[in-house]
Amino acid sequence: MSFRYEELLGNAVLGMDTLWGGDVMNPSGTGRFIADCWFSDEPLPPAYTHPAAARLRETGGVSAEKPDREAIERYLDAVDLPGAIAGLASAAKQMTGLRAQYVSNLAECFQVMWDLAMEILGQREPVPYERCVMASTGAPPSPSAPDQKREQVAELLSKAGYGTRTPDDLLRSVDEWRAARRVPMASVRSLGDAYIARYDRLAERNLLPYLPEELHRVPRANIEFLPIQGAWFSGSMNYLGRKRKPDGAPEYEATYEINASLEISVPEFEQLISHEV
Image (cartoon, rainbow, N blue to C red; front, top):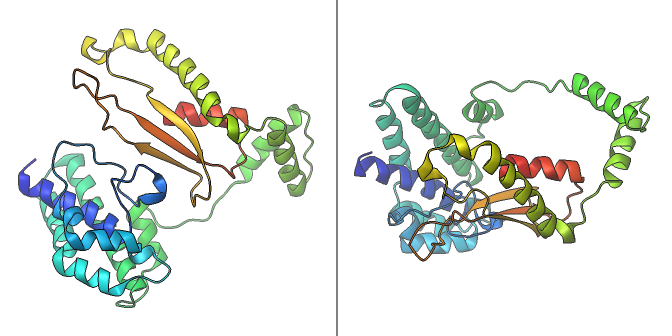
């Protein structure tokens, strides 16, 4: 990738993140927006380092209950976010294959997010919901059709001794099944460590023999599951990645923050770990 493209990409991603009040250097999901991490040895782009960015992050960007319009204006005067988005779209036209499609769609998503920000500031008409869905999924909105899955859940619950004849029965049975297997939030860290170790042993036995030798030393499971109070999300995977071993090799450390108010069963928690780790 050329320096120019990397600069456009960094400014578009972190510019949009900052505009919406995110801080990519925050280790918690509560402090970020769309940018997960920055553990590259490359310097952060101007979209993050410009003095106007700090105040915008501090005041919450357009996500704040009362956006600081002066902070937003100063930031957008200094950082050409529309130019970065347009530059990405233009760069995509010079690419081929899946890379071209990915970057083009990324630019479209950023354009929608820009328009949503302008809508919040009262500077444009409301963005149609269909446009948001199309940008993020590539397909128009469609109604949910959960009947088949509900029938399957009802069948499984009945086999486990939880009768379900009506929709209300289904909800009650799910709650009863989960309550009997609920994970205590105070035990999330220790239970997570146990399951992570189990899956790591399985990976070592069944996967490692088929990987190139140079990958055998790469940490596979350096992640902690942590309960978090008052989060607006159910869970957040945080790729930190800044720690180094004495020889300078990365430790690939990460955390997963799980909302402490979430009611989750042991089987659900185990599946979550198998997916995230």
